[in-house]
Amino acid sequence: MRPFTYERAASAAAAVEAAQAPGARFIAGGTNLLDLMKLDIEAPAHLIDVGRLPMAGIEATDEGGLRIGAMATNTAVASDPLVRARFPMLSEAIVAGGSPQLRNKARVGGNLLQRTRCAYFYDPTKPCNKRQPGSGCGALEGLNRNAAIFGASPSCVATHPSDMAVALTALDARVETLTAGGGARSIPVADLHRAPGDTPHLETALDDGELITAVVVPPAPTGGQAYRKVRDRASYAGGLASVAVAGGRLALGMVALKPWRATAAEAALVDGADPAEAIGRELAGASPLGRNDFKVPLVARLAVATMAEARAAANGGGQG
Amino acid sequence: MRINITANGEARSLDLDPRTTLLDALREHLKLTGSKKGCDHGQCGACTVLANGTRINACLSLAVMHDGDEVTTIEGLGSPETLHPMQQAFLTHDAFQCGYCTPGQICSAVAMLAEFEAGAPSPETPRGAAPTLSDAEIRERMSGNICRCSAYPQIVAAIRDAAEGRA
Ligand SMILES: Cc1cc2nc3c(=O)[nH]c(=O)nc-3n(C[C@H](O)[C@H](O)[C@H](O)COP(=O)(O)OP(=O)(O)OC[C@H]3O[C@@H](n4cnc5c(N)ncnc54)[C@H](O)[C@@H]3O)c2cc1C
Ligand code: SF4
Ligand code: FES
Ligand code: FES
Image (cartoon, rainbow over the protein chains, first blue to last red):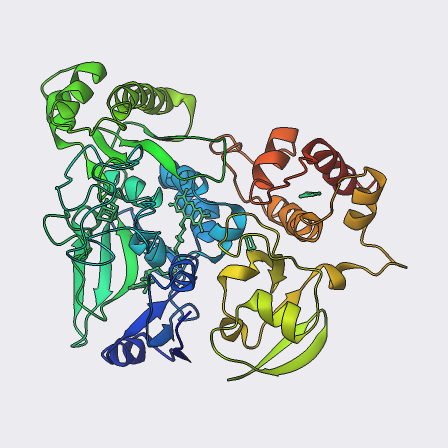
């Protein structure tokens, strides 16, 4: 690890102000940032610990949704009675990620902003445009079994690994932020992560030093909810693909550099297509690379099964 | 940087480079070498300790992030003369071979039962229901602790005994 200085933020405003210093970074749970700092992939000069800011509450909104503080731990969100009652799929997506120890430490904001787990990104001896702009993409023709099938570019074919973000995308959630100038912004989770284009090192819609303060989830749509994830072992492993269903809305995980809202499938469902036809419409736009071809039929089957589970939940098989 | 933590009930003051992880502070500075370093990247659970009663990976946390916290390691759960019931259950069931993962397993198991009592869900918990302590639940909730010797059947049996007050 490179040397850095450390401070514990006294308030959100103070954190945002301190973040204007060159090389400053927020640290929440630290489970992603420290992992990368140990490998010199991240080398902040100054850490601003926002983990103890009083922004961990989970409250019902007047509209019937929830406002979840950015510093709530993943465990606290997954265990919250209101979350489990209104958005059971969000709780289920969170506990599908990492391990209990990691979820106890990881926060909502940090989980959304965790970086890819592409093996070439993690290996400083390999080319990677995201880690070192202009060095090339090792995964493009390398071991890319877990690469993207949607929205990738020749510059970067990585995926975003968050489970929670996939659920929040299907739930039409938004993040609230505090900007450098002290203003507030609200950004759909679906627009938080950028497509790689030819600048894969630019990852989010946030400005430098902009702090996520909360996630706001609108009321659940009618129809059931379900989340399913496929991975190489039964637990404690990143996903190969996941599907989140909330009523007629669908988001796919680990198939793009952002949670992938399946808008073509949603439109097909509105037009009366059955689930298999609908996901087929989405997958017609997929661009697999060879080693990850399996993701196309995998997502097709997974989406049909997840839609069936959501429908069963809506018909009284659960509170969803 | 100077920090104060309570380690296994004892107030300690440490002057540390901010880069020091909680795990290295415990092992190298406080000489509490019970907590183990397996992967140093959150992938194995050997470093599991309790921070303010919650289980975390001590390798993925900076010591300075724990200024003011109470940290409990395997040394604080019980002593050779007065074992914690979970330690006794692991002995009774021979729930280890090399023993490297064991301190993490035991700290994790103690906190896991507290999470279970508090009603925290796992992927094995049916929607809308309170969890029941099935073997599948124990295995899933302990999945953050890898055992390379694969003592898993004995670990599950030990945790069940401890949970049911038989240890
Ligand atoms: C072995 C392992 C397995 C894992 N498996 C999974 C998995 O299966 N599914 C999954 O979803 N995740 C998985 N994870 C990732 C884990 O969920 C993330 O590391 C965690 O959610 C990050 O949260 P954090 O609070 O620790 O973030 P940090 O590490 O503290 O921060 C991450 C990034 O977000 C920034 N940041 C943090 N909070 C804010 C904020 N409020 N505003 C602005 N910027 C902020 C930081 O500056 C940093 O760049 C795994 C991690 C490990 C180590
Ligand atoms: S896919 Fe993206 S993250 Fe992976 S090596 Fe290529 S540029 Fe880097
Ligand atoms: S040493 Fe911390 S998880 Fe492996
Ligand atoms: S007893 Fe050897 S790793 Fe678990």
